[in-house]
Image 1: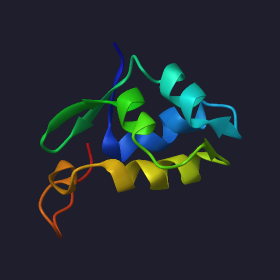
Image 2: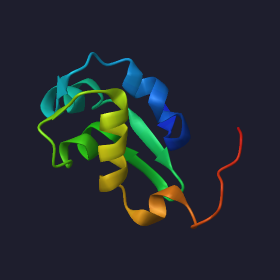
Image 3: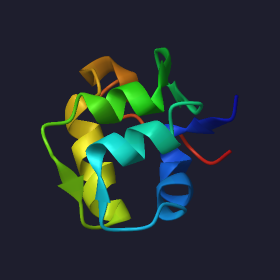
Length: 84
């Protein structure tokens, strides 16, 4: 099962063909683990929780993904994950 850090999610999302439906994006990424500051989540399951029916671009999907993440998933406020 592939894993990707939240800070590197743009590359993974850019591999999809847009526009894409929520169901299709979730199905294509159901085997991907998203690595977060507080653990990990299934990327496909997170996408399914979004309120959108479709995404016009990778940026659109990434923005919606941030809306469904738990606040603690991105670490402490005002702290950078840093390079790595």
